[in-house]
Length: 244
Ligand code: OAD
Image (cartoon, rainbow, N blue to C red; front, side, top):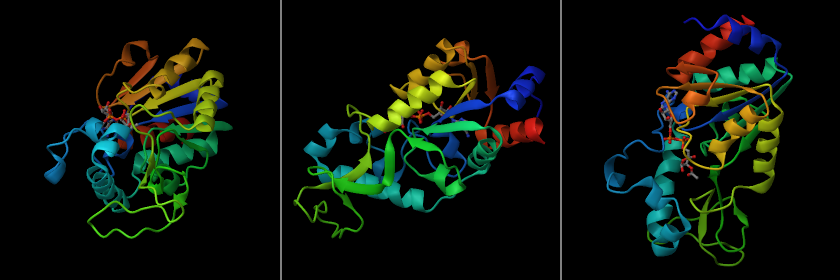
């Protein structure tokens, strides 16, 4: 795999890099991307119709079961070479911020340290009423488990459509985007705000924008470099080409 020489030189010199990842980064670990068709029991539902406060209010059991299914899928997978390449980049670039929309926790499992999880983490469960986190919960298969403290329904600690992102994480992500020299957008369709706007915030402040994706996205015409292909192949090759 060959890369433009000016990109390699730039990366070697950069001291501030930020990267935004999406579901495409975990695709090679065996997780379906958000907008891929669902399988089996869940094929009849659109993820957009399950990941919302309205869906939970309408049918909490359906939403709980969908997340329980996804939680099990996440438990069964491991990070892939794309995740590990981002760990290597963090070791080599003095200031590196990894911003992810993924709720699967695979970046941390791979060893990334400075990770901002904009959409939460599917392994964390909290009360939908009092916000208390639950470490354990009984699931009788019949009803949604309840909070031991206030009796409210438990829910995954992820951000649903229409909900606000965790404020500190979002502020840190915006700051990283606005102050970096190079911004990577990796494996994300770039259609969900506010994450999608981070690449533009970086670009407006003069950062070089590099996109890694299987296919073009709305960001592609604005990117300085578009590296088309699988992140699990491109990122390790890029790390090798820049840092040897
Ligand atoms: P999407 O499913 O929208 O997009 C996945 C992107 O990854 C697509 O652009 C694919 O072309 C690309 N892709 C797939 N496999 C790839 C691979 N091996 N290497 C590189 N790219 C690959 O997922 P996201 O952009 O993450 O939010 O979706 C953003 C948010 O939308 C999700 O976090 C979720 C959803 O709303 C919430 O649940 C709040």
